[in-house]
Length: 162
Image (cartoon, rainbow, N blue to C red; front, side):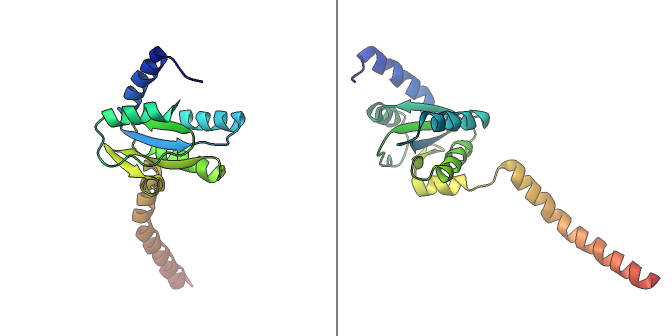
């Protein structure tokens, strides 16, 4: 069903604010049930990611006017835009649902630091661990040699006692 010019201008205005976000994930959500979409939106909201569904023509117009470098990826199917000021969250959360609903949600590409990214590049970004995980890995890396040294001293102490 066609929408009026006023509604298109309203949606285009909203899209211009969406496109101004630091990171966007372009999502094809063809075949999701209402329950799955609700679950998807709740998971995105819980991680601080907003989600907007739009007509592709309006989204392409807003993305074109935003002055983003690179080439807009192909956008088959329905278009949803996950966006956030956290650079990795939209890609990560969308990729999580892509694994869960394999044939129904797919990451089509996105915008990262003012540049269009392909689906493969967005997948690579999605696989970067969260900051909390990276900190935990760093602490474990620092702790590992110390722990090995303590275990060696403990073994020497037990050997001398025996």
